Amino acid sequence: MSILKKQTSFLCLAILLAIVTQAQDSSLEKTINRQSLQEMVALLAADSMMGRMTGSNEILKAGNWITQQFIYAGLYPVAGNNGYWQPFYTNSIPILTGYNIVAALPGKSKTNEVIIFCAHYDHIGTNFSSSYNAGKKKLWKERKDTIFNGANDNASGVAALISLANYFAALKNNERTLLFVAFSGEELNLVGSSFFSKNIDADKIIAVINLEMLGRYNNTTRNAYITGSKKTNLLPLLNEQLKKQNYQQYKKGYFKHDAFEEHRLFERSDNYSFALKGIPAHTIITSHPEDVYYHTVHDAYTSLDYKRMEETIKAIALAVRGLIDGSDTPTRIKN
Image (spheres, helix red, strand yellow):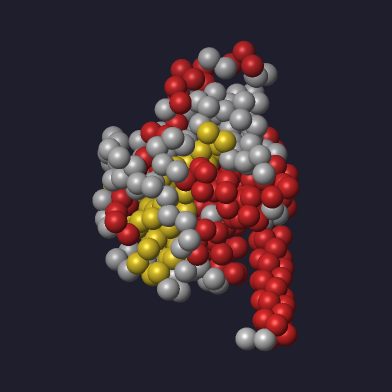
């Protein structure tokens, strides 16, 4: 090949990469922004949702809304479910019927390799009483509110889930198959994700990214952190991918190690149902495990930092590109 032809080829490649990058950046801004995040959280955490307790009429409303968002994004239902809905029964008394909302974006070349993005959309309802909440009464002025809205826990995670679904559906360049799952029954000891994980081929699941409590920030890690971060190499993979996207912004490593291992957060969210099968499954979270709003009636949509929430979700979208295109594969968990 002549020097002129080589230069022309390199120029064409550079132009193509610039066009692709510009399209990705445009989609990022369009699908992940603080206004849409606040609107989604406000809807899911509204008083009319009555705390989204599994088995309630209100959580069915939330499930219907999530389903519509998946449809609008252009995602597909998964065979074996009732459309986008996967029913299960709780192990509580009384026994309740819960529904996972499941949608897929088929991969282009690696259809049998699956990345799961998930977040739980249930919360604890109304008139909930716990020793944790009782111990905080001195922190709040007396109020007659009895609705545990669950804005940070976990309307924030669901908003992130829908935003990422919109983003990757708009790009249409995922080589691996993507599953987007909104779990119910998390607050009842991970019932929904436990049921879901019993009906999968673990060998086909490359990674699980669980999105939890992304609306408030802690002073220890400051940025988002990854629970059980030492169990696989997912954390360095995500940070390395971010450096490739924007070295100046992410050279210090955006995602942090789990600084709260004594709280066993790795075992307390839906990622754990998959981790038990050896799947590299972690929760990305920003809040302190003893967040003052956690499981209180004060976890309202007005208490979230949407600017930083937008920054975190955009970082996730960029960091998982290696997982999406098949170039990154995290190590398995040894149980």
